[in-house]
Image 1 (spheres, rainbow, N blue to C red):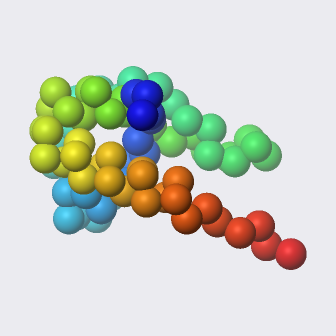
Image 2 (cartoon, rainbow, N blue to C red):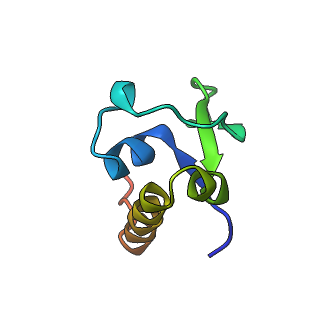
Length: 77
């Protein structure tokens, strides 16, 4: 696995908190465009950045990302 970008929703789930209750994070590495239609960008952290901050949360983020890749969303008809 390369050094994927992780959105706040994944970090929150890995840390057992809501998005608003996630403990203090390091500064984000980038902004991620969520929708191609120009929606609000989301902050993104590299997995390596999260690992330096909190290895346990980074391990859980990696597991969530892996599960998301294995079960892709089906496009709505």
